[in-house]
Image (cartoon, rainbow, N blue to C red):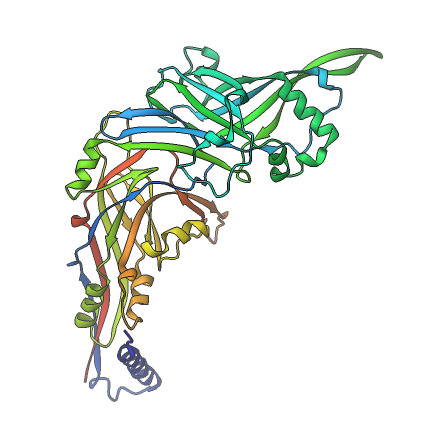
Length: 462
């Protein structure tokens, strides 16, 4: 849809203004006048429906561990497979393999960062993997062919609270601890001495140690959000100290993280989910339901053609499109587990949804957009749709793929520049990944969405 008449009109306007500015007399000033009118049009309707989202690619360090059976949400279970980044160096000064005391798997969660009941006891097993994990890896991954029962290296029972331990009650984190065989620490130590190249990269290390599988063994009612996982080795060190010219042998205790989960390694939440009858019926009845990490997204049809028709018919030849925004109401689905709406929402062309994540893209305000949930007004607002509609104005024909978008919960990573007395800090989006942090759900009211077009109409009167 080419618009040469608009461009020509703007050029005429500019030439008239220039001619007036170049003439130092007042001749003609009473013959040509102009006026600018701001027009706001919000008479647009958005349509949409829920679409299935059976799997996601886990691109986060957050590990979900546990299971819940929530009447309003459904049955959700997640366990974990992960590789490790090895320490590039292992301190051997004053420490021999016989000085290693123990090794533990530590999984850290922020205080209160879980879904469900903090007190319910739950069990887990830790298995050593016996083959390489695939990459890419998705939430429907089944680890059964990657370990066997004989690969069990540890187990424990845990809760999510401090269990009245005064030394832990004031900490802002909790740690699930699993004692592992001492032989693992010795194998790591000896491997470092004999084959240090194994520790040179996560790929080289994974060839020797493929990783672990952490599985739920019993208990239900909580999903823990693990933000950091590592293996600590505990040892004692032989040193010498000198006091008043007297040298004495002494032994000190030490701890070192030999392995850790980092962005460079493969880690995955293996998720199974059965949607609740309540949500299923809401979607069946036409409600626009969103459920994550897996479950349902919302697909919408954006009224680009009607917006363009309004702009062209009401604006005239000398119109300028100022802004285009869209707010979509969304509310929490009532539940007893504290499951809320997702914080960040991606709107992306449905035809480009898969490549958006596969190519690690960020939003461009032309084919993809971000909105943050406004808990006060209970809506998501996409505030800069102008570049998109300008692209549509310049198309010969608007296709169905141009107006079909999917709304997807996402996790957003940002970086900020330092501010100064001359410039405020600027925040940049550095990564957008599928949301795999905790169960969330939302009830969208697409019919009540507010789309607001603002443009300036200039009239020239001779």
